[in-house]
Image (tube, rainbow, N blue to C red; front, side):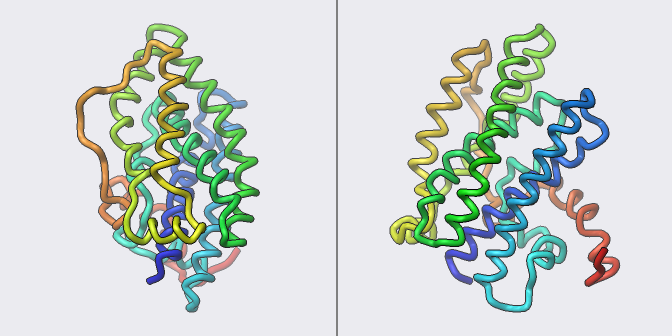
Length: 249
């Protein structure tokens, strides 16, 4: 399998699984306006997943469509990072996870907008407008909750304690990615991590939140080693296509 296919599929799976997670808030958000806002965010992200899956299908060059990649692959074939498959938890956990991904996506798509791969660059340019707005929303929620009541701060700190160790996987590299970076196709993970680290830590210093100083670093999602949460999600997400292959609305 080509390095470009693996790279694009990782980006696609990150957005597909995150979009599916966010969609779980539809109808159960904390209040109506936020319910609608987060559902629209989910639709934006699933739209990005659709474009990336279609590109991955094109790169692969066989009969496997974007829908096949989304609904007919088994868990071990997904390349998303572990962060996006984590349960929503309470609203603090959902919004901290979203903020971490939003900052990553902003810098990622900024870099990919200049990719030497024209179709990848076009997807990134279109997606950048959406994720820039997403980041503005999630950043405000981090500040509101971290600087709000004792209870809201406690919940955001608990979310930080749980999720911080998952962000490192976003910036992992390997020989394939290094080659794509040299070709001007992929974004440099090390540079992305530096920018992400500066922005996220700057926000944290504006609040009473504390970064966990101990703990492991999550890894394995990019090579198909996932948590139990992904399997349960896929059972629900893929049921219709698995039960009735090739069905269409």
